Image 1 (cartoon, rainbow, N blue to C red):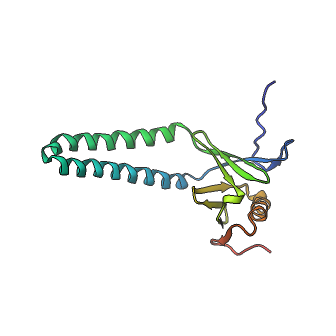
Image 2 (cartoon, rainbow, N blue to C red):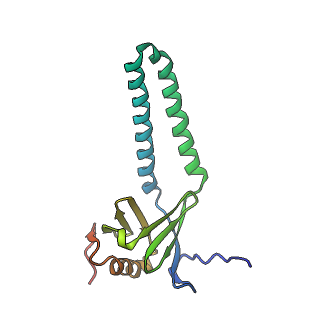
Image 3 (cartoon, rainbow, N blue to C red):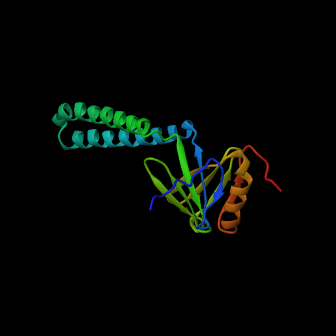
Length: 169
């Protein structure tokens, strides 16, 4: 049996009762991940340098080039892998319990019961929970439906905040 790609650029209801769609993601949102990863790499390098200075200052001669090399190679690999992966599209599966976000490098489930805050931007939604934040891109024609669906399923569990827009009636 051959599986058919059921993801379209509009929100569609599948035979399993889940809504599916795909959207182009904004590259500026990815830059936040780059900054976070580079910050983590800097912290690791600083810990290595600080630890070697405490243990034996003569280790600094060896550790500094290794730490700089580690930072350069890690940052380069991180940057290249994200560019090669072609993360220009994300796919979404939304049902009564969760939203699944699928791209070429990860698959994330955000269960409605765990969402603590929904932030509504004019072009997308952000779902916040203790484990992180996810951006939900939606075609403009289906934005109201997806927003209302998510708000209905998180009603009473999550706070709702509107950024750069007024709440719809």
